Image (tube, rainbow, N blue to C red; front, top):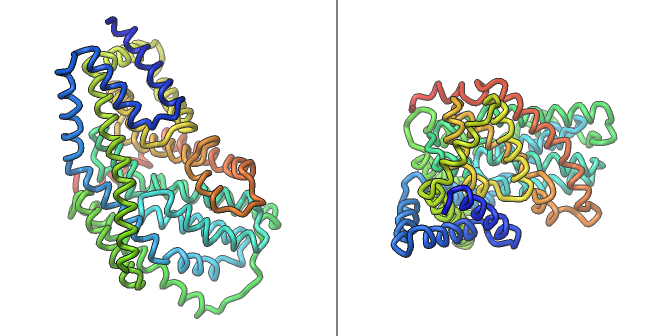
Length: 436
């Protein structure tokens, strides 16, 4: 069959299966299976077996269940309550202080957990009712928590970064360190936006009107000690070259159990629930990896991938135009698909093109992650939006949530542009790493 016709058939099949609601992992694996059978016959199915076994036994991917377990254990520690109490005492009397502090707590959770849902759920249950009770505008409250929670995929450790690193064959350790400065930049931009809006209109986020002594404020700082130590431990051993990201994930998992032990939450019930949740999420991710790799191998061997590369590289446009179009494709896909699925679907196609155009795949990976962070809060199917809908009180509608995140999506887009213009924001720290 002609390669161009086969590419059209594959595209139509993919769009059809996704529109029918079939999970992307099974869509990719199913299309790859049928394509292999039609192209090479039953003997070609050995490709699927080899792909499944090869990916499932990858040492790099051991980091995924360990970081997921780390996040699940941290849910039971109660650290979110102590961190919010600290923010309440130190920043409550500042206009917008509670929302600004909530973004900062989300950034801390991001650096501990690597999954956006942990921060979103924790702050949604702890900070959201508190701020609404104290007269905060609901859009400021919802927007700050949704956007702050999305930092979990940019600030390391990040499960999405691991998936991209494996698919693009980029150092996961460098990706982790490369996400630090963009993550801090985005966090600061969110906080500055909230502060300026509250400064212009104090009724949007009024001070709480309660005062605390210096001693009471200093006592509350103890709530940040365990999170900061855990963050420094996990990222420090990677940056200093003491551990690989996979080994650091084991350190993080052990550290999370220690935090639970210190907080007297390391019970058999909590441990079982953490392990069960880890197993379910990990199984979903590995099916996605297996399906995506089978699809990528089929695309490569059927020469569809080569056709796409030649078509794109043959365009009479600048390489920056191609890069911008790719970012726009990511943004549109992010409105409808899960970021992990987008990685699996697009990385085998776009990364070779980016490398051929002379761009740094690590820098491109950080751009991709920022774009996927936008996907977490972009209507209509942003993951964090639906998490919040299950938490917010009845008077906060889905329309309110959609409106609340619009300014934060624009701020994310601004940071994406800044990292595109100034690549050093993403590459400076990785270039200083002891472990290359």
